[in-house]
Length: 616
Image (cartoon, rainbow, N blue to C red):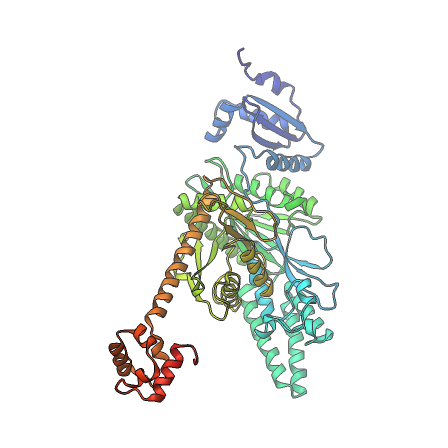
């Protein structure tokens, strides 16, 4: 049976001039491309002209066998339907935004007497105030950490808060005012909450005015210690305002810049809310080589703002202004749809001046830099990172991963290791070892808890960076310790994975436990994501064993005789020579020891007691 060629003449003759969406299918009916059109007849006809088609369009038309169309009532409906079909079918010739996960917010639970400030992702259905969205979980963690220093609002989970009988570590390091045990009254706490809201709304001047008034009141009552605390808060706020304020106009806007090279593209998004720069993030959309930057920006903006949140949650909030570094075709069409979806006027600008031009230039530079980094590291490591992103359902390719392991011999000389991987691979300058003390020998759970507490307490204090993914070499027990430590330190937004050896303890059969999930999952033995996990786990194991062996060797080289008061190097040497080594000294009685030159009876008794466990 011969294949019937596509009858373009009759198809185009009967095609409507109304708005709609068209789909190009391959021979096996796979959708190759989805497009939108204000005028279906005019737009689809343009694919069949004799010359002037871009190389990627020519390749598309060579594979196309049939075209189907959906007529819509309005142009806006066409654009939204196009976005939904692209998301559903992910056609090869469309530009695809890899990231369609939900986006993070800061949530303030205002319904409580002592509200909680915390990390939130997904739909905003719960009671409280939501601030954001932020470009990444890291940006949320950074802001939460800053807020703890400015206004010590609690960030612990409600279950943790309700069961406290004494202050936790956050109070001790001055990151919380301990409302759980009544160390602050409702009025003072409410004032901190009010200032937090003003700060997150970008109203820094109002916060500073409030703190100045409180400082003067405290000084008037001769409470100079509290006045000094307010003074320090004001200084930190002023410094922060100088660094983060975008312009005197304030407002909400997103700055989106695209850079392309070598068949790849990077879209950099800078997020500004209330005049504050909340952070930026790089995206690497998938597309066919030859796509223009303006085309990539148009596709990116559509999917970025009109796509559903994770689990069908609310769409990403749309700011009133979007700055782009390339003029977009049919930008008025896109502006109209975004305005309709946002419920307020949305404008897209490519030509801007002054402060906005400088920020657009910065976004373009960042897009170019991120793309160059991506291209320079396009190797097996990059493929493994992307595979891990897919395997764990991460919002983006992880930029920093850490893995902990414990090593000891029958409980002796326990050492914990922490290794760090970033986009360049092992980051050995950030590796850390922890000598574990004060636990029951062989208690791996306690050892893991101590190492994690020591590591992330320092990070909370500003020493180092938080990882995107935390691997724990161990099963559910070790993973539980990690979850408890992160809760105690009020650290959120980190994906935590436990790596347990399978029943046969063979590589490729590891059980992977995600924190918060009861059942493990197993990746195929040929999975690139599993290979990366194994590499990180093996590096943590190697680093832990090396440290353990060094510590054990050092302990075993040190003689117990060195800790006995009054027994100096010369006397130790005489003892060892007289009895042929430490074992001979250990077998000797008190009188035998006292016969050695320089060893009195009192010293002999002390040596005997130490060797036989009667004294320390």
